[in-house]
Length: 161
Image (tube, rainbow, N blue to C red):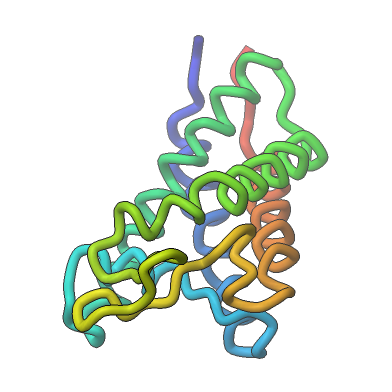
């Protein structure tokens, strides 16, 4: 399989930048309380001020890694279109909400669990099913941002035949 490395690196970065910006904007507008960079950052440091910085770095790394999965699918299908990217993005967002978010309390050293509640060390609120503990609009914001992320990748990534 031939990967268009330059196209992947460029559009993986751009799509991750847009995804992160959309998520931050939706949080800033009060449409969700979820802050994925902050959640990721507090996994590696208890310093809440540094957590955002580390979290943004981790979120970009994750975004680039996930974009590689999209690119592999585009190459296998010999098709990269905005709508294929939207479909993959929605499936990606659904997996994140339904599978990965509920796992956070088990792997996050500073996140309370649904069963045990907060402690002196575990003070972050768990996301709950579909991230609903962060607001009822959270699933919509995650699906929207991931659909746009996928659309950018599908629209601009150049498949190598």
